[in-house]
Length: 439
Image (cartoon, rainbow, N blue to C red; front, top):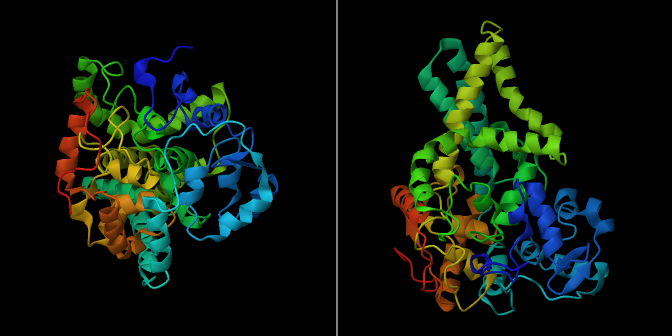
């Protein structure tokens, strides 16, 4: 098969198979990655093939991460999700052989490079910083979780529009704060993510394994899942002029329906192809059930369902309004097709695909509920958001040494930039590194 010019990736030597799927899902992404990654049916880290079969149920972070990555290259994910040096030593006993083929990914994690240098400094810094903000994160999570149920019940009982909106916003915030937890070892907080009709297990694939590792590239599932409604890759063959402007009109509708589309797609795929549903998909039903029980049965089941669907639509809209304008889409941010930085360090690539929300800094609540401190979160996803502010000094020092830039703007500027990115079709001829509002 002849690969068209626009299908040539900036971070890999192969156009991802999953993008040729009729229906793009987490399952098709995983299936395509197993075909592409030259992992020989096992697990690949750098140029080594490992067999972690016996380790699946022993993994301290939970069996999911090992089980779901079998047959793929996990080099970058392994580095980003393990801060200590112990895992590097432990995997030696699971080594099988050298890989027969070179890696398809062109990003590097060299000793002495930006990410490895930063990681070592962060490892030392974590030994001295205050850990109490982690407890504050837990309290914030619990607070928004409880408030969504209270506002939902009040809304149904008193037919209050204000309470309905507050319930929707609280549901949105609960989902976003729960994202702070599903990057880590299994915990109860991650299950709250499912209250928004999405599923943490599915998002561990689409968000943690795909988007976090390969942001703004062809391998980023969070780009392809929105196409053709929203397309941020700057290529005229992917989006016509009409589609570019129409996306501005369809965007609010897509926002309000995003949660429902996610669950609908997964149900459809499960019936037609392979089951990708879980028992904890039923957790979202706890909301209408709580409304019914909380009102003492005085509100009919149909009315409870209407309240639940309305607040979920508000939450969906709010989630997209925050999430899609949080960090990754602006003409100044690297997207697939733009000129690559000469230094192919994976950590610098992460920095180049993000402009942080500077207006969130200083508030742990806002950071947790609005995807704040985004650069540091991408570089060290398993760390609680409450710990990230203490790492800025070493981040800025290391960025300065490796000619990287931490860029910031506010939410309105992000929204304007995101809409400009929807219109952009010409690749950026300049390599990333120079951004707006450098600090």
